Image (cartoon, rainbow over all chains, first blue to last red):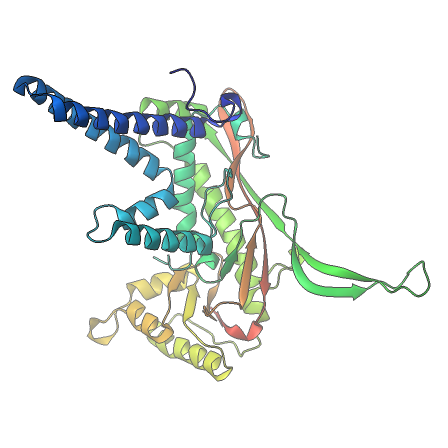
Length: 130
Length: 267
């Protein structure tokens, strides 16, 4: 696949951004693999082959979740939005809109770090007195 | 590469993750001012001054029929707290060591947090900063060491602010000694003093290193303005075969817009 997970020259990117991009690429690949196995399972009649593919697809589920968790841990805003959408009952689009609005407003009031900043990202701490 | 020169340091990604995490964990509990005052920014390292919206007349104008005024600004102050980490310790991080000695980083974090708190609460004339307690026009209420009297003192401070037309919620910054006394004390009937004070205030009580005694201030917003240029960051100074010398750094200004919105509680 070469180095096509980078959109900007790799030599200009900080280490952590390159790692982030690699995991984003991995997340995409796992999602694609999940979709491919889903299609194969839909057409494969042989039971033993299906069992192997179901097992393989389970591996991809696990890889996808591990990639996602890694990325969320390093992206607080993404994590906050994800917390408002994932594992919730009800209207997904509605949850998405609400989660985005709350997370972005909250981040702005906290003093979120500037894009590309290497700061510790502490910002304002109102409401975090304990 | 930013002016922090982090890429020049012989520190692996894992090492940086540990240093940044440790710094955040040490700084957050000690940054009392940020828990009580308005925070704006960060606006970046190149942000140099806060607009005060005022001007001074400039007397000598070369051309007749022309007047001149000059904008008044508050320059941001840069704080820097250096520390060193042994390279052997950083190498052990990569081996998976969990008990890395980051004592100098911990001390630097406390020093810079104390300096920030001191500027905000006590003021810093050399940097043009007027602090919350020194700006307050209200009569001071001595806190003392007798915890039984603290609810009365805090209630009096809150009443003073209400009487001046300053709405709540109100927050309380307590110096380490007073904070410890409050945490240790249960009132008659065993009800924690901390909870009683929170009910009076309607807001938080924060541990405030560098504050002597305490201060009650309104948290309604718009009264106390902290402006961040570069938020707290770790940068690289230099290194040799034994140690890497780094520093914690930030730039900020602080203004009191409403001096009446706080009451000083000296120890």
